[in-house]
Image 1 (cartoon, rainbow, N blue to C red):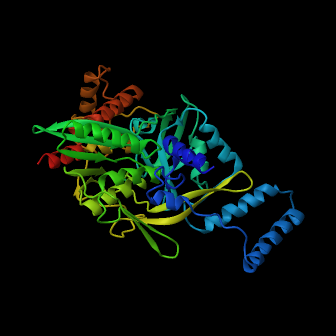
Image 2: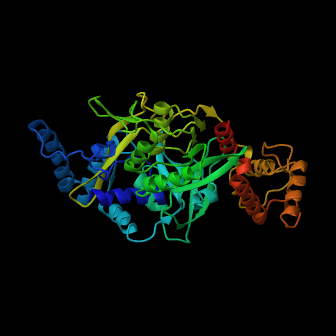
Image 3: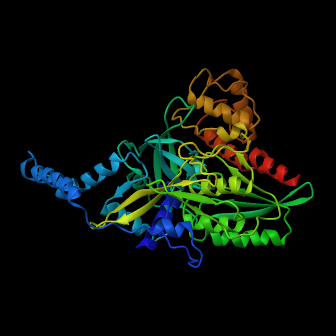
Length: 483
């Protein structure tokens, strides 16, 4: 069952999941104690004392009273599930949730087929359901969803009062179908709808390359999430890079929402020496367990780590360990800020409770929950990276003044067409810029932004974001390693 749930949480992560560092599978190398093994081995407490029995009797009395006396007939199972959800809600912890039998079955069924969804991690921030990060090249990324987007509605239905799993069920669906997600975004005045076409989400999580900078060969490894095979793939690709004679390494966990503790632990044991713990686990009694690598010394070449606000959970464990235990600099933006560990426990009705059991701390004992990890070198991306989708149902034209015009102006500015302003007013300068773009894109130069022009603008913006020449964070990392 534990292995099944490890795979299940991985599936959630790959196809819209619960943002959370999850402990669920025994570490493969049993001869060496690991923190993933320890936190997964929490025994299930059985029985209760007299005081607990007396408290539960009050619950039983309320149940019997409602079942026998309430003005309308009630569903008994619904009352029990409501009681469980009520206890978890009292914890005020968005990562401790209850999955009923139906919800658990839906996710179990997804393990027996290909993973299909939008490719984004869903989490909680200040009590609100948000996008933690879209995965690389996923439908969510292509549609324009961004970290910290607050989800308001899914296909017109509000998600207020729903937990992460219930929201995930609404978002998931068959490949080729469309889901409409209404989001609220910081610095955008009005909520807007993002249409995402569901697709099959690939399981590949590690991508590597050699970048040539000033005559030097710099290794580059991107880790998009921490799944079951991530550590093995990382080791294999790192070895291949080292055989090519790299003089430095950039590890990219931007937009990586986390995943399995076992994977990040195995990677850290390849990179971090044993002078400091690479992570600390704090229990409810305040006791801290420290975990060390057996590596004598770190790598002979310099390493930098790329992070952003979409780097969460297990990604932050890796970033914090490399920063504090080995002194490797972080480059980019402050990370998401999730410093807790969850484990799923099956209950008798076929459902499951995923409960927060521990805090995890950096090598120096810092708890980054809701704060994130600050980079050593802060680098903001060009304006094109902050462009929002154009979601207006009507064509945008001269003298309009709204958020959609502003979104289009930001894209035009980022593409080098310089509308002269990015405040949302559709000026004559904006008309000229739109016409210039339309001519370049072989569209009728009307100066209006209709559906075709909006689609072409967003496609051009995505292409520019994929162009490494525009990735200032990566360029900064490579320059630093080439020195």
